[in-house]
Image (cartoon, rainbow, N blue to C red; front, side):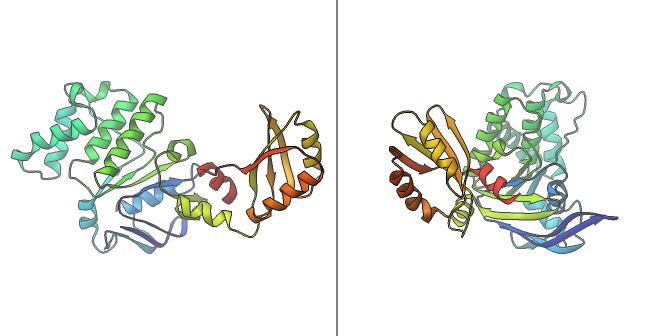
Length: 307
């Protein structure tokens, strides 16, 4: 569905994006993760045909952003990181204006706007002035506007920025619903927790360079099978944990030993195949092991491992 091919973009002497390549399959929610200034917005603007790459190309649904930008605009919906609104315009009027701008036939506009407001839960506030809306409601309105022409791909730049916890949850549920409707979604953020519960693919970018990209499960499996990695392990013992902590701290390749509510956590700088050997070593030292298990890795673990 989306292929970013060796894309570069510079602004005078500043290298914003360098040799960036990744792909996103149809129906994915792709999390584009990186600190502020990493190149996320620049990349998304190139996807949205607002900027041209200096080198490389981006294909969306098999179409080049350089060769056929008008065709790209028909299949994407772009939501920028800053949302401008007009005073004295009601929500319904705002959406009908964009429906007209997208040349939706007049006879279809009312039904279309009704459906979009229902999907985005704006029906009950359709008469509100858009300038009086809360941040969360404005984000929802902008997403509704992005859906007007029924795009296959949604490109959402920091849509959860500045939202309160309830609004973030509502946004996450809405994006999951849009995924069920067949939309492919690229969503950026510098806050990992915003993306961890909704994305099935991820790309981590830093200083304009893609550090890793792909299905989250594939990345985790690949890193678990690598020659050496930093594992986080949980150890449960019978009785007081302090003797086991002392022994762990004396062993090579062990670090970060801590006790949390009776459970010992630590890092082990060896591949997962070495865990049985570690268990034998602990038993040989008379540590009363109840369980030794790796922590479940998540998006934060991927980020910490690659940055």
